[in-house]
Image (cartoon, rainbow, N blue to C red; front, side, top):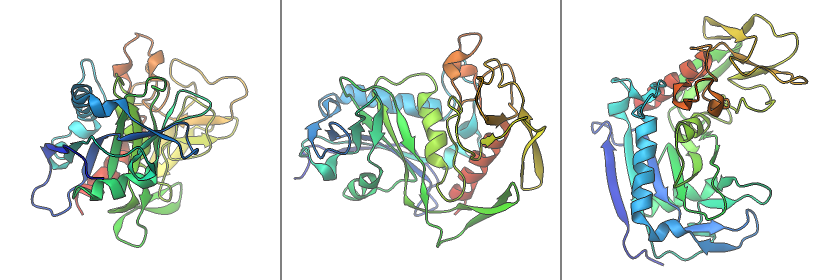
Length: 304
């Protein structure tokens, strides 16, 4: 079924000298799977509320590019990075509530929204769009927490080589499946940037995980006790460990530990930034290895 009024808005043109600049797409979710993995679909309320979608798209752009009040994490605000990133929003209505049109599902056991990651690229391609990272915006009446999946890299194509903890990896130029985020229209503070940290990372070349749970080893998380002084070597740069988990502390029984922080007084952006000691979550920044990893990954992609 052809949508009645697709609206494609180029929010940031990106590097217009390239045929395929690094692209972030923000899409109104046409249909919700309720609940996840059941094959039951309903029209997402966002499709009848373009003003809410536009506000959500503006919020996502503002936090991605470091424009929130009090925001200290400026990953994409770098003048050598931000102008080269293409950002496009897509608002669609009139699509049937069916599998091929559902970007977002409602989790069965929580209020998490779940990105249906394999649907994003085919849906975007219908409108002549593609993405490296994509946000599906929902107005679910019951599920409001965002979540994300990592990128599936195209490991058969080129990239920029690096080593992490002695392991050879690559910041791949292209993806097979974009990093995907399911986000509610009412999301605020650092949510969209936190989820971007997950989505930009990679299943095969380094995952950036949540630090507010006892996570498995990844780019930004290691396991073991006692906590060693050194976290990991990125290329030739050694990074120290965070022995105390900033102002929060490691719970008794945890085995995971994190990388040293840029500002040790505040939680890492991939941790529980809502627990910022001054009650300003926008003061949270990435830890040192996550900042370097994500910055290098973006630079590789904008340079392809």
